[in-house]
Image (cartoon, rainbow, N blue to C red):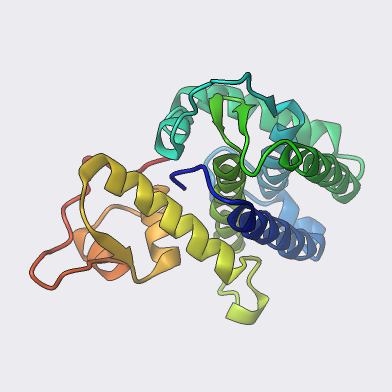
Length: 244
């Protein structure tokens, strides 16, 4: 988010993350056993493994520690760009976690979330927006929270698409505030790299394009983003996407 942010903004991001988690957790808790066994929208994972990955996203906080004074943080874009290099490790850790919590997945997820949010509370006491060490390098705590929101929103949407049927808006596992925040964060990554002046008009559509969940198409891009000035147009981002 271009950190550091002030304490009020960090509180707002933290609140959105917690609300998104609770909404997603309730939704996952209502899935039938048959739905958990089916292949997910993420190639190679069942829905059970996709659910476990949600817990893995929060479990990442267990290793987050304060950075030494003077540590220069990565930007959000620099941090998430390392995701692809870690794809094999992410897959392995996800499968390992799915096995660990197989006996009682919901209890396992709740335990991971409790530990994660307790760690966030402790880190927030250090400074308005401290620099911390994430799994892939140092970054501001606000950006670390946003990376977890990206995980929950992108994979929460993966869960919806895994069911193979429409989900009414009122029954969606995605918090509108969370989708908007993630969409704006991913747009910020693009703008930082290219310098364009763009805005989001379809948050979920843009998240899906940015995360590579739908094939890249200039028409879909123009429906998701627009230039702030009528004299300009949305650039072709085909060589830049997906971001994750």
